[in-house]
Image 1 (cartoon, rainbow, N blue to C red):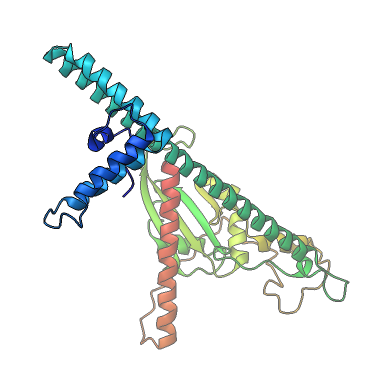
Image 2: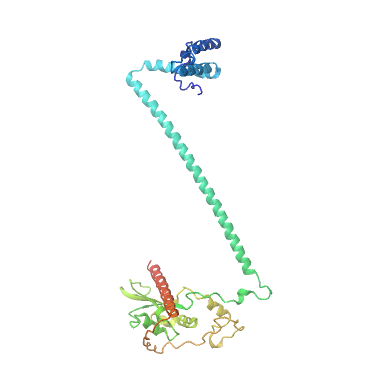
Length: 359
């Protein structure tokens, strides 16, 4: 065990050795030998504290034989003596006050040090998080740049024969909503189109429609002067999927005429399908006078397109009678389930679109 420091001595080393504070080094050694022989554990086997006493004498002599530590000890003893003398003149109340102030000062120092340590730790953690975020952001930017460079290289890479680029001839991939249109009208303007079956029958003049996949929603709208709606008026919004792209294109092309009749028509996806742009570049959307710039590539689904559209004034054909349900095989049952799933998806999209418009 190391000797006690001068700042917190349990016993006065001079008192342990029985010498004065002005004792010389020789006097210290003589006093240590004399007292250590008296308390040595070998000579005091019946004393359980003999080892502790011998150790205290050894510690005291080691401390006093070190000039620098003895100097610090002397200064500490002088301060204690001065403090004791100063306190002797204080009354009990003043002593208690001074003691309380000193305790508060010590507690304040400890609290300030703890707070400073916590602030340093927090700043260190914040710096680490910022550095980690910066590193992750730089890594992500590098990955995006590399992906963009790979895409550019893939787009600019020609075919192996070096004559024609593949992207210029290949049609865009088909989309889920390429043949689906979005119809919106006031029920008061078309009271007979209150069901999906009736709406499908009304639009069948443009092309075949599967009534089972038509999604319809009715919702009361508040008055909007820009659209001329009335309070509580029922607005019908429907998604109508045609069997052929040409039929859906015919309806959208007639949007202006249908709008005059109180029916807004647009693509369900919000924009024209990319396949129509590809067909337009090939000159296949211009009606009977369109000229083909080149033959349609073999295996292309959209190798032809309708050149005429039905008249808008002809009466809608009567709805066909419902067919009797026959026994379904596995293939028919699977197709029915696929249609029901598509219908549920379209219903979700139309509800989300209505929610966005209402917001």
